[in-house]
Length: 112
Length: 115
Image 1 (cartoon, rainbow over the protein chains, first blue to last red):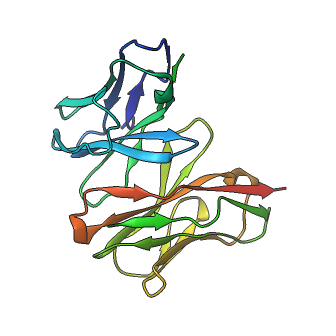
Image 2 (spheres, each protein chain N blue to C red):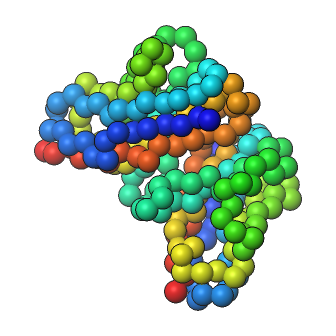
C-alpha cells in the first residue's frame, strides 16, 4: 500500500483564490481526518468522516472551509476565498476502527 | 472532555543515554493512547499504541511506553537515544467513553539528541 496520498505537496496562492487539497486514504480504512498544523496552534482537527459521511466539522474555522468525501478513496478540503492566515501544513489521515492513524505527507499551503 | 498534555516543549538528551518524553491525559472512559513521531517536512508516523493488556507497550525504532492508570500518564521511553531520534513527538488519546471517534493530540515535544 502506498499509504495516505496527499496532493499537492506545496501550494502557493494569492489571497482570495480558491484552494483545493486532495487526499487518498488507505484502502479499507473507514475513517478519514483533516488536520491543520501551525507553530502557534499545533495540530488541529478540522473535520473527520466515517464511511464517507462527515461526522464532526466543529473544527472547521470558517464557512470559507469545506470538505467532501464523494467515495471511500477520495476526499477534498477546499478553501474559498483563501487568506494569509490559512497558511499552514494540512494533513490528511486515515484509520480503521480501533487502529492508529496513518498520515499523509501533508500539503504546505502558503497564501500571499 | 478528553485532553492530553505534554508538559515539556523540548527534551535534550545525550546520545546513548535513556530518554523519556512525558504525556498525561484526561478521559471520561477507557483511553486508547498513541505516540507519533514527526520528522521535518513529513507527516506524523505511528510509533505505538495502548488499548488494553500489558501496561508496557513496545513500538517502532526501539521505543516503548508505559501506561499508568493511577497517574493517567503514558510516557514514551527509550533505553539508549540515537541522534536520528531527534524529531517532534506527539502523544494522542482517544476517549472510548465518549464514543472513541476523535483522537486528540498533544502540543508535541521536540526531542534533541546530541552526539
